[in-house]
Image (cartoon, rainbow, N blue to C red; front, side, top):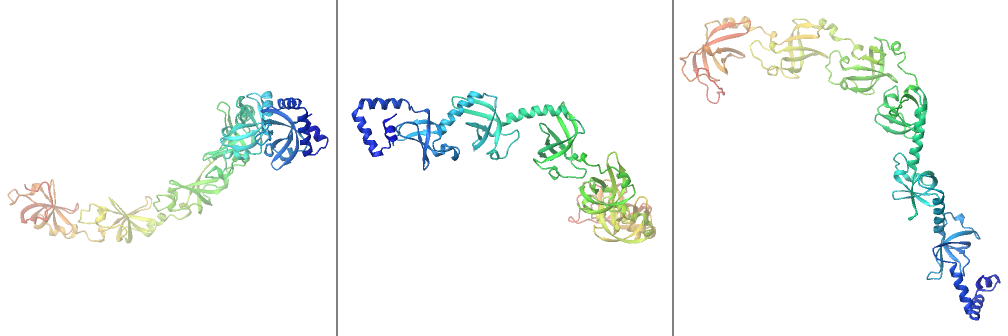
Amino acid sequence: MSNRRLIEQLGIKEDVAEKLTQEIMDANPVEAQKHYEESLKNFQPDTIIKGRILNVVGDDVLVDIGYKSEGVVPKGDFQFEGDIELNKDIEVFLENVEDESGVITLSKQKADKIRGWERIITSNKEGDVISGRVVRKIKGGLLVDVGVPVFLPASQVDVRRVEDIGEFLGKTVQCKILKIDEKRMNIIVSRRKLLEEQRAEQKHNLLQELMEGDTRRGTVKNIADFGAFVDLGGIDGLLHITDMSWGRINHPSEVVQLEKEIQVKILKVDRATERIALGLKQLSKNPWEGVASKYPVGSRVRGKVVNLMPYGAFVELEPGVEGLVHISEMSWTKRINHPSEMLNINDTVEVQVLAVDMEKQELSLGLKQTEKNPWDTVDERYSSGQKVSGKVRNTTTYGAFVELEDGIDGLLHINDMSWTRKVVHPSEIVKKGEKLDVLVISVDRDKKRIALGLKQLQQNPWQTVFPEKYKVGNAVQGRVTKLVSFGAFVELEKDLEGLLHISKVDKEVEGEGLKAGDLVEVKVVKLEPAEGKIGLSLSRVVERAKPKEASKSPTPVGE
């Protein structure tokens, strides 16, 4: 026992004790120095020694280690404040016997780490499973306390990507030791590796016991556009979007949610590829059972428009039962380019059942069948020879469509636009949107066609005027309108032209040849009223076209 401790046990005051200690040293300096050196041998830095907690002063814990003065341990070295108990025996790491201020520096944290490390490497090896509490989130992963802090990389936390590894703080986890570095006193562990091995075993067992038709509980682990993956406890199965509900759904998230437990039916197990098909709707009654008797062909029902496609609209009659209204079944009379011209999503409509296919679970519906077909009575409203009014709805190369009433169009053919004019395109005579008086030529109810005429509203001049005016041999004047390879067209009067064939041009006619715009004297050589044609021969050029009137012609007639 040191002199100081003996003096303290005798209850001597500190100032007196210092004086007595000095006197002892003075009385036997050799013995005192020998005793001091011996005591130092037992307190070598970087060693673990035992001590006893004496007191707590501020952020320092005073520990008696059997030396001439107490050592100091930082209060933060204790993981829990409840671990600091007076007179409690602890192990500490001696960092410095006496620093510059004469304080003995101790570390409980280092002592705990060394002892923990010794226990870990003594009882564990790489590949062993250990448990610990997650105590801190650091760069690249987590620190897990297993007696000593070990590193759990973020990539090894779970088999699936974890958005925030901080959610594991404070939790006790099991991990597998990946690497032990004794020199650096470092251990790397993996929770993912352990989970993968456990899942592999569970997967093997599940594949052996799963049977088609079984019902199982599982947890939704991932959601995609085409379906959801459900963890059955070791292996994932695919719950396809078409097997989620008997009704229409746009996305799997309308039916299932991540991390939620659901009950599913095993539809198919492929042990070779380890694929499992799951069903959710199969757990409830198929609404298509009894559809044929509930919705017989010809019956009229009401439903809601749930989807529009270029070829038609899907109408829901009840949850899980839909039918298609094809675009051709939407209107008796209107030409529809897209169903959106007639319907909108969520519209409630009345439809007629046209066909039922129970095997394919398909319903064909009609929208126009709920209304009277105006073509059924069209011949009661329109007859041959009747004068009617309409609006030009559209023009094509062969004619114009004239709307007589809502959905009922008649065709005004290009040949029925003028008795005399050679019409190249209907737009020369009529314009889109123009109101027009026409004559009904014919009505075909079955083919849904009405033929209209514009020229028929006037007398045919080929039967009344022209035969007398343009007798064969008559001489008339006209102006050249167009030159062609086989001759020239000569305008005899408004909208009336005759053909001057190249063979009918007199070689002795003065001039260098005919040009568009020339005023000529011609003789009628042929008259065909039925075909609306007049044949001409050239007598003479009355007046040459002025340069500005002349049109370009590659081959003037008569050159």
